[in-house]
Every structure is written in C-alpha cells, then in structure tokens.
Image 1: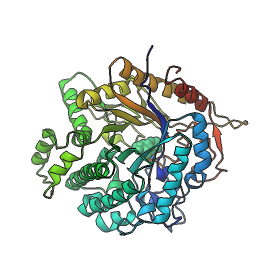
Image 2: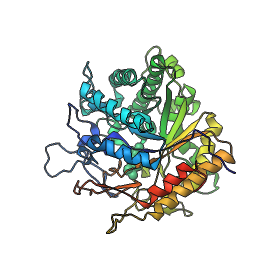
Image 3: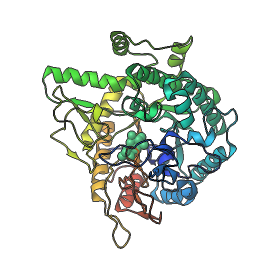
Image 4: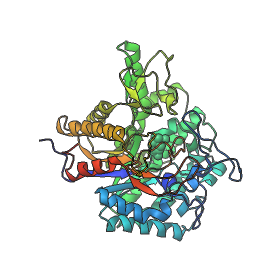
Length: 468
Ligand code: BGP
C-alpha cells in the first residue's frame, strides 16, 4: 500500500494581498499590488493612480480575510488541513518600508491570526514577502535593484522573526523569487528592468533570502526556513539537439535561483553568462560568506504547468502572462480556462529533477486549477474538473514519494478559499474548495459556500492520501 509520510503537511495556501483586503486599515501603507488595477486573460494588470475613479483595485477589499479570518479558519478546520500558508503584508508592519519602529497594530493582527490558526490545530506556514513591496521603496529607491531595499527588508524580517519566534516554525522568505525574470512589479512598479538591473535585483533578492535565513536561525535555531521558486520545468519540443540544448538553457534561467539558495554560491553557467554579457554585479565585502551561510532547509515551489523549449518560436501560447518563459504549445496537454497547460506527470518529473539535484526536502506550496465556477440555486459548485485536476496531481506526488523515493514534506492547494488572481486580479479565476460570492469588481455578498471539492479533499487528508 502506498503511504504518504505520517506527518505529511496537507494544507492550503493564500497570500495577504490576494485575501486580506483592508488595504488602508490600522496604519497599513500602500504596496505595489495596491496600485495594480484588475486585468484579464489578455490584459495584464496595470499600475494606476490611487485616486483614478475609473480604476478598480482588487487588493483593496479582496475577500475580506482581514475581518473574516476567524470564520474562514473555522471552515478550514472542518476541512481538516494540517497547515495553512499565508503571508505577512510588509506594508502592515512598515508602511513605507523605511520607518524605524514597526506598526504595532499590524503585528497585533498577525498575532491574532496565528493564534487563531494554532487554536484550531492548523500550523502556520508564513511567507515573508509575497509580491507586496512597499510602493515607497519602489518609487524612491527603484525597488529591489537598490541595495538599500535589502537592508529595509532585513529590518522587517528581524521584527517578524522576533515577534513570532514561538508561534511560527515554517517560513518561506520570498514568494517565487525567480519571477523577477518575468514580472515587472519586482522593480520600480510598472517599469521594465534592463538586463543588468534585473541581474542586480536578482542578486539582492538572493542575498536578502540568505541573510533572512541567517537572521532567523540566530533568533530560533528550530525554525525551518525555505526558499521558493515557481517551477519552470521545460521539455525539449523535439529531440532535435538544438531544442534539447535550449531546454537546458531555459532551465538554467530559472533553476539558477534555487541553485544559489540551496548551494550558497553562483553556479558556473551564471558566472559565464554574466561575463559574456559584460554585466558585473555590485557586491560588498562579506556577501559571499552570507550566501554560503544562509542556505535553505527546504525548497518550496509552486507548480501549475510544464513548459516547452523550442528553437521554432512560431507557436507561442497566447493568454498566458508568463509566456515569455514558454516556447511552444505542448500538443499532448490540455489547457485551463486561462490557457495554462495541465500536466500532472510534469509535477512528478519536476519533483525528481529537484530531488536528484539537491537531495533536500521539497514542499509543494502552490498547486491548483484556476477555473470559472458556476454556482447553482442551492449555492453549490460541482467542480469535478477541479477534483480531477487535484487527484491527478496528488497521485503524481504519491508516485514520486513511493516509487521514486523523493522526499516531499507537504502539498498545499493554492487559493484554498477563492481569492483574487495574482496575475490578472480577477475573482472569476477561482482555485478554491470554498466559493466566495464576489465578482471581478468587488460586487457580491462575500458569503462563503463549500464546493464539492471540499468534501473530496477532506477525505484525502483524513486517509492521508489513501483515498484519492
Ligand atoms: C503564483 C503566485 C500566487 C498565485 C498563483 C496563481 O505565481 O505565487 O500568488 O496568484 O501564481 O496565479 P493566478 O492567481 O494568476 O492564477
């Protein structure tokens, strides 16, 4: 009989900016995401002025998790999840990022939230930065390309680690650190980084990640601190040697971040690339030691889709906002309503690939299906398509553990309660096992209704993955 490990971390995940709302309450400052308007499958979110009456900003109310966390956590207790991943919004704690004293009301909110989770038997897994850099740091410092942002971030990190030293054990420093490769809000919001600024920003993010690990361990040696990437496994489109080599190159682009976080130094392929492009990274004394000292305890990753590397660029997938990391459509796969290709076996391949390379515990901290749900007259959603997606992906994890011997710590369903989409800000792109009555423009009662997938996942957890 196939067995998931006894203490397998079954759970769900959300992020502060996509769930909390209350964007200006209790002294919170404005983050980059708070000025991003709603987009759609074909229209990326755009930076707009806060007083622009024609713009709708989904993060401002999101799903009101800020006020509704107690009843939401009670619902998640019924689901039986062992852990919930959420993030701390940096701007609740340091509204502009540069204050010397943290905002006590922001800290008090997360005290209440974590206490509530713990009371309900749900272990918090906490991300320190989930895309919500203070807008002040983006506008006045140019975002992560500026070294000062590392210092401000570490000031915030120190505050958080000290405050929640005894409440939180599992930490993820930066959400999808490799997404600096393809989203603009890592830089000065709305502005594209030049290649050398992007390399400098990547360096700062990696340095911040390593320093956070070091700081965390000095505050509580029992902390388990992970680094996180979005998985970008890329198949060669064909066995043409050119396609195969391109898939290696594409892999380097993304796995570079994991290589540094796990191994503690820049890999030789990156060093050669920087030389070739005459890009020199500005470093300071002691940085190399810091990268080396701050390696991660586990590698966390999000997985939604595999990708294809092809030297023939004629068939780029349309509608996927991450398309600049994608070559061709994979003819063997189906796509979601938002054009993301569905590939459960790809998850197993990725797990093997990561584990072969690093031999450290892996944590799937985001996986799920963003789909259009139709709620019936009885307020019920029969989301068999979601059950099917999750079932196949969990089966792939099971096989990776049982057959391939991969060390997997846990599996979290992304957007366990419907939240706003990260890439488009839409509410209609739903991942949840709980339906939230709210539309793309914030209209609706905000009431929660369990979907069919809720009961399905409940029995998966109850049987520790035996009944899929
Ligand atoms: C990841 C982000 C999440 C989440 C997820 C799904 O990149 O870490 O914040 O948004 O993608 O994306 P979306 O919500 O756009 O479907």
